[in-house]
Length: 198
Image (cartoon, rainbow, N blue to C red; front, side):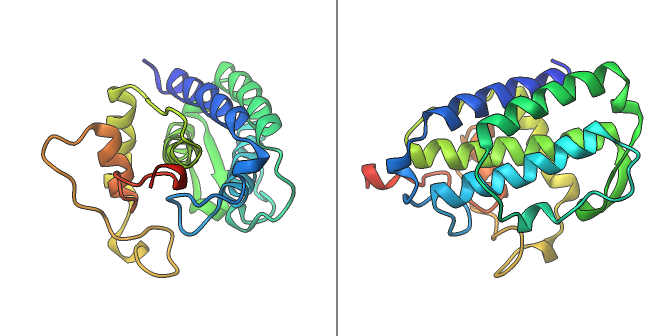
């Protein structure tokens, strides 16, 4: 499966999970850095708005506010739909071989690399949201392996720890699934359970 189709499939899965969360679940904890479901949805909204802007205008030097500091309203379902449409247009225009400016994520990169940045954002936070809400999240193994390879190639040890983007990597068993390895590398406990199942 091409990288573009992988991302679009994941966004469809994220839309399903987002639609499956309810207001009654918003105060539930998630595996993601102390976020509850409400704050995680808001965080995802900000991140996906940023990627939508980047893929909508790859050459723009200014990209607006830091996506990680987004404090606007939760518009997750609408933003997923908009980003999916933006991506389809960008891919048709050849964005994978263009340079995309994402200053808050490190500078300017080939579109294929920015797609991988989006991949790890969606696959990891999709798992965070799904497991917190008790919903399925089952990307295929090839997609999870791709995300894990990108994580391993880009995440530096100094980016882990208190106040940083990632927690320490969790140990996993030799027979752990690719998705379990992804979330463990991202600093989550793959065995984390939602509040309703503890």
